[in-house]
Length: 191
Image 1 (cartoon, rainbow, N blue to C red):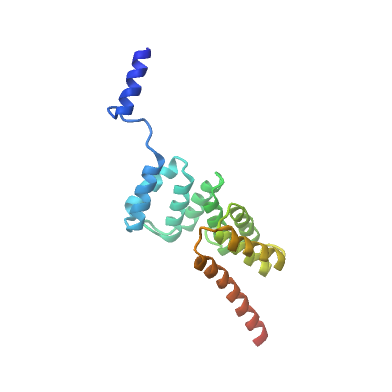
Image 2: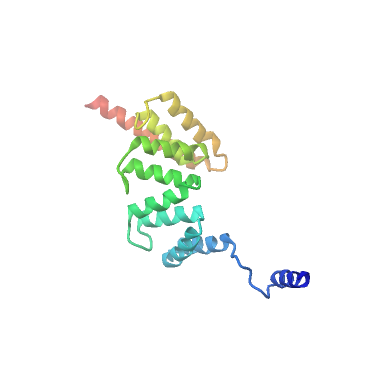
């Protein structure tokens, strides 16, 4: 028996017997590469395989493809389904995208409180856009109590917590919301 096990191990390492499992990232890289060159059929095939095996990143990507109609008919309800699958595994990207679906009422009834809940979970995991969106929701009192102090906390976290994000990326996200504030204020003054 020992010789059989030893033979199988050596043969698998040598490559003469295919391994029973395929590395998850092999399909991910193929899918990502296909997506980047707009070969959505191949990307869809790779992401579906991975998503059906429980890969949360592939589930988020599949949800994104449904949400935006990339390689298949646009379907917000199906997008939400895949985002929920990823969220069940604690995936921060899925949490952010599910929050955005609730905020916009896409595939689910619009619910700002539910959006803030998902943004908060993603923001705590370091998702910059979730931190900025949560700050905006506190600033405007959308789905959460109005609080400039809490809004500032989330904006500061977004600005300081993502050191690997290019400064112009952070500035663009923050300035967009600050300009939105200015527009609101000017509208209030002029009307």
